Length: 306
Image 1 (cartoon, rainbow, N blue to C red):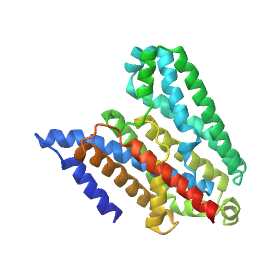
Image 2 (cartoon, helix red, strand yellow; image 1 turned 180 degrees about the vertical axis):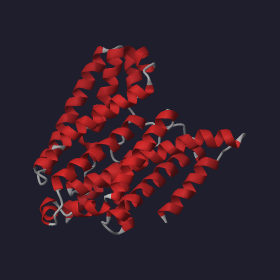
Image 3 (cartoon, one colour; image 1 turned 90 degrees about the horizontal axis):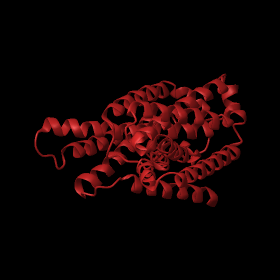
């Protein structure tokens, strides 16, 4: 059912409002569609995998300071290179640097989870403190640069699905496909990891080694999606929550592809509605994030009531 819905919104995105040469239309919209599918898949898979590893259904890797780190990187580049240097920076170099920095930071941050799988409060608190520190450094740099140059950094600091570098889209898609295939191939181990560290060890699984590999995959997926379009905090939580309800199982052989399909359907469908039907030239990320934030609050209140 999720696959049929994705095909429907994909057809609508490619065809609604199309005029002129279909070869040009499909080529232009097709690249943008690949970017949407890549970001949605990367965010959904990383969220499901992170929730499995942490044993908590209301956590996402993006709420652990990724957005603040991304903002700091953008502002730091403008501060160091100036607005002109930032605008002329090679997109591949920028993409590679951002991915490398955020992946390394994620491994250092989430590595705390490996020391004590039950100490989630410390991990969350560490992420929040680092996020505050990154935002403070960003504010400091913002006061030290020219206002016009800060506007350049600010425009690059919000998730935007309207303007995506075509060449980077295919690189990100290949990386997401490779990591997603790796996760799906290890779905049985993910099922065991979801039982917790003690039960995983009792079943003969090398939990620490598998956790390190899983953390690397999560960090890479989040870093790629963030470097491609910008920070998206709550979208993964929204997609994962819906996927768990639709799938009706915790088996990752089903949960992983279903979450990717639902996330892709939500993102492509929302972009089609805003861009093709309503004619609003704005980013759909605002609405997606609002729905994800409401989902986050709902999950918290539901657990507190229980």
